[in-house]
Length: 471
Image 1 (cartoon, helix red, strand yellow):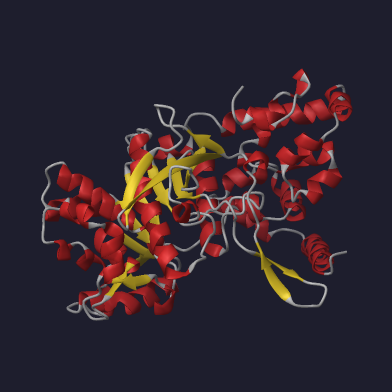
Image 2 (tube, rainbow, N blue to C red; image 1 turned 45 degrees about the vertical axis):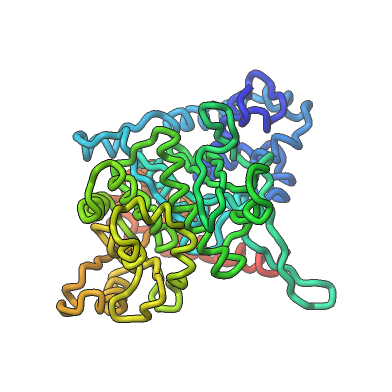
């Protein structure tokens, strides 16, 4: 029995596929799949915040046997399983049609400090994670080969609650592996960790958990292992907590550890994407690998740049991570610095801004220097970013600073409300989601009946108000 299947109790043979459906987050962006789990037990579906694993764990065997004999439920189930088979299949479709010459076995490695895929896996805090989650979902939809690399925050991101006396307090939103699709990845020799890295003169063992979202696979790194020093076991426990010392270690684990975990798994990416500066150490580790393989320092930097993309999100200087250079050097360790074969000052110098505080190592500066393509997340943000970082190119006018823009989008199937989608189903046919790049689709949207559109708007507004009032 697979570790994922162990999370789900015995199911009737007619409904065995529910286990595979519940343990792949693709269900979260498919209306019919969500409705299927809701039909099993609507009360548990709501109380668990839409967690199908919990629904199946708490479902009475008699209830499942009854559903297995229900022709209508079984027809619903068959339709969803047919969709899931396509959603999990080997890459095909849009990606291969558009780029038949690219090697699908060399995926994009997408590094991010947080991934917002679904509320049942609370390892994100806001927009950065939501965007990363939407990228993973869209990659699955388009069959773009992509693997996500992040951290497994076992205590999640802090939640807030109001005490009886009216004061607000923080509470941990702990992640329970037994109620999520997360499974640990074992090394080939059976040890629980995949790699070891040295930091602050101490080894840190790193294991990974895997999470499936359609065709996309995420690897989440974790240091909570008995082999680690007690202080290091908590390094990946909480998102954005513990101040700068913990943040530095977390970003070292994400970047350097993430590259080494991919190597241990035999994954050879064709492109490397750092979503925000938190992941910039990933580029430095790859440069170190190249130098150890025979490249000069400058050749290694140029090679890393050729396959690296960096997306910056923050429009103000205070929002970019900066650490004391001495702390970064201590985190790296002399062994890591000596691997580059140059004066060790040249390595931390990659993160020092030429016109600002010489004692500050800035993750965004490191990412800009080692990425061949840098972009903001909106056209206006591109302008702001060129102004913010333009003094790295003192000889260039601001408009020629090599920072572009790719405007943020959203994963439509996740964020569009069901009533609005039903309205489009009626007027545009059920396949409108696959025709979004056709002008005729948008012409039809402009022709929607205004009264029906306003009625749907009022329905959704009522839903929002009831949620706010906790009715």
